[in-house]
Length: 626
Image (cartoon, rainbow, N blue to C red; front, side):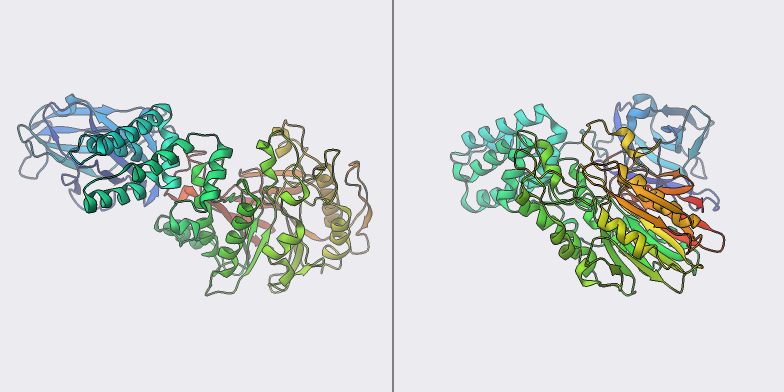
């Protein structure tokens, strides 16, 4: 019988009731003298997973073991005191701890009566309701399975071993071959095997089919077993081989609800309610999600495919948002073939735009440096830029992101990937710029595309002309202007993302600073001469806002850095929103908890000149004055 995860709330629900005790005997018991008994506890607080790593909390357990009194309590008078104090090694993620309890925790027959909790060396201590379970003596009927957790492939190995000993005709040799293959892989890297097993569905689907054949025909032939061996063998290859193989298969076996965009998962629902409860009425509100990095197969992290489903979380704020925007690096676009990149972009866009909503809210998609598939050059051999026909172009994204359709009544530059829209009732002008504004059709000496979005963060002359002469022109004096783009504008300033890049392969970023200069001149009603020092992307314009006069500039909102951050450039607030893509246990993020996702619901309080940022999932609440 599998070990049960027991959920305990440190908020101690029902603690106002006298003698509130949680009986976990249906899930866990022990026997006198048992050693290394595994007990798995998931700690939550009012339904939200405890973030133990942030405060360096470790599990502990205290109580008495003995005979209960007339009130069903065990005290120092009727029992033996026991305690367990764990370490960070007990933490397994997602709010869970796995304690291997020593024999001293079960010194005699009776009942354990005590509590679980979390503590750190700084004096913090949180506890649960009182807990009880049975400690038996010579009773073999125990609800405890101390067998270690086993991966799906380890289970498959056990199953194959058993089949090898079967009397079914001819099966022994075949299953021995399968067993040897699986065993070699387990010894090599079990964690990676679990990932591959989940991705291509070897351990369950194919085995189920073979079981049926064994049942129906009384034996399994080598022609049945060889495909599994072949799949496992191919999976041992490098990424490029595996990617090409899976693309050739035409499908990846993952959670279908994730691939299709699915629905709001139940573990996100309390977080949605919490954020909505924080929002103030009548303020301009936009939901910003960026860096979902979704793709059917990812080199980076196997969990990243879940982020397609995160779109549903953003859309759940349609009833309280004036607009919802997916702000670049929407797809990771790292699959082996260009057709695979296209399929991911189109799937992502369809899930976002075609979801029926009960509330009318504007939906926009902006572009980032990953979306066009140019990241694939990082593992090309030899390393080089991609050919003109091996990545996606502006014309493709204008159709995929539906910018040609002007779905929300916005103003664009001939269907451009940048736009602005006014919200007169809220006195807001919202502007999105394209910070990966590459020049296409320019080649290097090898004939490859000279610039691509992955390594090019810039704004070119045409877009800057539009920004100065259209988007920032004729703005009513009582409007407040919100500007957004994928990449921070202060790319080469202290605290900016460029400080962490050391590959020398980022092009055009100086132009982003010049955009910040234009925005500051707009705010101050000033004049600025723009002359780019970027030889590849020359800029030359005079932005004169003296006639228009000073205007209300809220700030610049971006992604790309995958972090919560606020920096300034000449008093311009540059507000970074973290990534929606899930990276396991990075910054205390855990799968199937609210922390799996991260985005912001942002409100502009024009009266108090304040930006109220409501973090969803692992994102933090913040407030920025302007």
